[in-house]
Image (cartoon, rainbow, N blue to C red; front, side, top):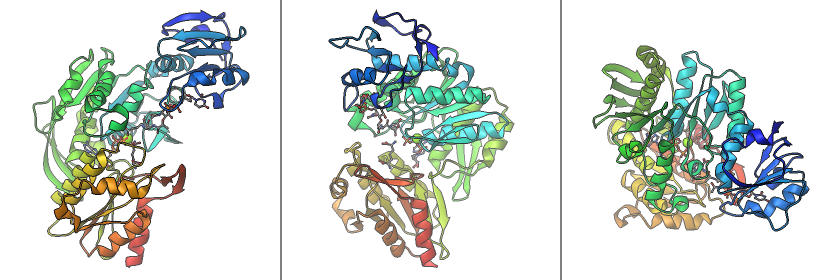
Length: 486
Ligand SMILES: CC(=O)N[C@H]1[C@@H](OP(=O)(O)OP(=O)(O)OC[C@H]2O[C@@H](n3ccc(=O)[nH]c3=O)[C@H](O)[C@@H]2O)O[C@H](CO)[C@@H](O)[C@@H]1O[C@H](C)C(=O)N[C@@H](C)C(=O)N[C@H](CCC(=O)O)C(=O)O
Ligand SMILES: Nc1ncnc2c1ncn2[C@@H]1O[C@H](COP(=O)(O)OP(=O)(O)OP(=O)(O)O)[C@@H](O)[C@H]1O
Ligand SMILES: N[C@H](CCC[C@H](N)C(=O)O)C(=O)O
Ligand SMILES: [Mg+2]
């Protein structure tokens, strides 16, 4: 229970109807989750307008309402507050309700198109290995010092987010490493959080269904850096075209990392093979367990952030060298007849290109690369032909299949992908909508030494078809097929 007046701190409201002196039991922004004595925040969404549910929320027990427009008739026993932007107010209110837990943690946010989960997870594992109590908020899962809480979003809604941060404070955590998605920034899910640092990995094609243009996608990402406090660090990838743009207007302490361009933290790849990476990092030569140039960037980002968080350089390198990456990111197994199977979460053109170029760099000779790939339904349609184009240009054989079709027709998604394929590559491309069949076919095509890449679903344990999440696990499918090959 918290007093309404306390949870309104920092909220710019234009009108108040009521006493502001009531006790609030919970903050709720979905009328279907209203509990007696709660505050209902009416948010205009992408599908519906939360203002249409104010009456329902009051009927079910809400005693205070935050809204952008007052309804025609306002119940006198309910407090009404008008704000310019309810989503923004929701962030501040949720933080206040949980007593601003981010101020009692060192909170580091990671943003960018690819690499967020890998960087946040490595930081979490690293700091735990160095003896700290930590929290993690990621696409794969949330963790409160080892306790796993399933994740529904890359960045949770403000109420769930502040509740998780508050659990971390109660557990005595020193640090929290979290992914900051562009949707979360645009929807103000991180409003009211106090960050100790921000990390930018890269910006490439994704989510144009939501942001419409690449410029507004960049603007969303940049808004996170622009609002970092002066006391925080802003760490960017200086090899990315937009790395320095991210730093332009931030009041935070600006730092860069890079393999190619001038940067505060530098690394160079000495060896890149299936067994891992040998890097010259800040003038030290160290082997790491992760594979590929993109992971050299991720490792360097983690190393740089750890140093900015005042950790000892050699301790960091010793711990980091022992770590494996996040689940479903370049995870591989070898069949009894020596076919290599890789499961990777590449679901953007850049990620597909990175993972396939890595496979080319580290394969021993003329082994064939067979890629199984689909594209998500109800997501950016413009990335479909590009992902298919990249996959066919970098593979010897491609099986186009389904990812999570969601509410779309799988055959239409595959057709959209086929549009991007150059005629010269069409003859080594087949389309099999059933993902299980597609994986089985890839295993049948493969000869000893060949490499199969299952792209797009990584750690996911489901396939979403028409609103139903059916159990599906790429790694398990691969293991089963490899057993058959024995
Ligand atoms: C497009 C998008 O991001 N949508 C998010 C958004 O929902 P929305 O704006 O569509 O909400 P809406 O359905 O229009 O409803 C508007 C308001 O009315 C309320 N409502 C609605 C119905 C009702 O009966 N009563 C009621 O009160 C809703 O609770 C909401 O507050 O706000 C919701 C609450 O926070 C999110 O759950 C929801 O995520 C959807 C499920 C989603 O799939 N989001 C994905 C795209 C996403 O956020 N992904 C990023 C990662 C992307 C990446 O970088 O890879 C993430 O951070 O996970
Ligand atoms: N630094 C990087 N640069 C480019 N591609 C990367 C990088 N790191 C990982 N990838 C590729 O992107 C995929 C997703 O990586 P990861 O899950 O770490 O990214 P993410 O930003 O968390 O993605 P999401 O937006 O879905 O949360 C990986 O499986 C790999 O193929
Ligand atoms: N965070 C990403 C995940 C995409 C994963 C891929 N398997 C898909 O379903 O498209 C999104 O929601 O767009
Ligand atoms: Mg992620």
